[in-house]
Length: 276
Image 1 (tube, rainbow, N blue to C red):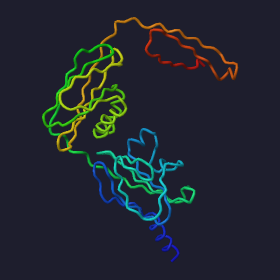
Image 2 (tube, rainbow, N blue to C red; image 1 turned 90 degrees about the horizontal axis):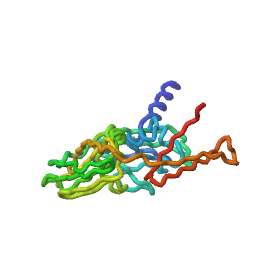
Image 3 (cartoon, one colour; image 1 turned 120 degrees about the vertical axis):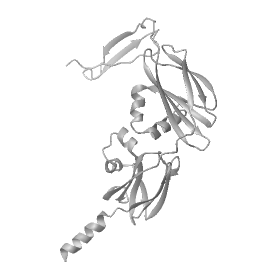
């Protein structure tokens, strides 16, 4: 009898209280059936990977990550929405983890951490396309001409290094489209309608770049168009840079003052390493 009671207790203890009710490309509806107080969070695979977190269970453990909740509830986790002062993020075509863990009044995890994995559907692809042309390619700039098809109501363009954008593409097309669209808010992209001609400056000479274009049709379908281009070779002499290293009076075995001056350089990158 004791063994049977123990087995039943164990089975009840490991039942996952998280149930997914519905998913769209930008929302997840789910319920958490925990009567006591618990911590809740929803995170996508790409975020965990970028933070170098090994698992959803590890993600929720640090203080302040989980959102305190109480009692069985139904949640609609919608991209751009807010819950308890936290901005929600849901991405199309992406693996997401719903995490819940029972906690005490001080938000310390006291029970098992439950995880439910759900993959959101991707958006429908855009019906239509866009043509582009690179002109006036220089060492530090390029002119990009774009002409969308009639069915494309708007589009976003973004220029990024090969290394950076290859890493983004590893998370899938939907993530790349989302990044291109959000680049406008960071001042590194443009949102456009109709034919356009734009010059991108501040590029590095003789360097390969990605042009990424996210297009959207009248029905809301989205697609990604990418192309590579290489900037021209600079024929200007290297700028002169003066540098000096001065030991400090405070903790000289740990600290150094590095003085750098250049009247010609637009920017300077520094790298140093001990010789022993």
